[in-house]
Image (cartoon, rainbow, N blue to C red):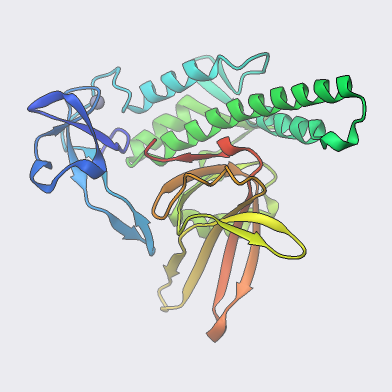
Length: 310
Ligand SMILES: [Zn+2]
């Protein structure tokens, strides 16, 4: 493990003007890599599996190396840069609000904006008056855009958490960004879930009223499910298998659904994505007494999803 964020771009020591994506770094070039923003030396981490789920190649800081204090691959600078971007939301409230030396992530702003979008939803056929129809459409587009901006910030902050490896960085993040839901602080552990913590998410899911963030590896490109009763798009995450001491196994299957053909269109197998939304747990019984524990998310805004490496 190393301090600083997991990275997906590097530069060569001998050619510092080139920014190279991790998947294009040849084996012969894996020595002599530096951070894309500062001179810190970094190393290439081989793709591997965690609980049966694929983790793609990434870059991490070498031992005893340090990013410069303003490098965007340090936790603090990454947050500062995200906050600066998030302040430009048009006539909206602040999702990340500065308070003393920290920031408050106001979960309720996200929830209220989601509710406002549901309220603004209309079908054009319902409104006969053309002026009213135009006004409603404009209002809907505005509400949708504002919600997209909020989700952009929420997935951005979850992405910073997803790129952290060291516990000291986790601690720094939880001191720098406090999550507020209905006036109460909720811990980062109750908001962010990677494959190690799918079991806890599944166990608690029924009782969680607020949105959560989950890290998923995409299993395959989206499928259009079209039956007599319904039509929707489905994106499955890779199965996470947990083996217990008595050799018994538990299977966790994350999955996304939506009604818009564009939401999942750029996602493909092995993409690691972060999703922010409300989780709905279900179970599927398979042969030989196998039970699949599903973690379902219904996606209603494209910005609820972000790719880890983007
Ligand atoms: Zn750096």
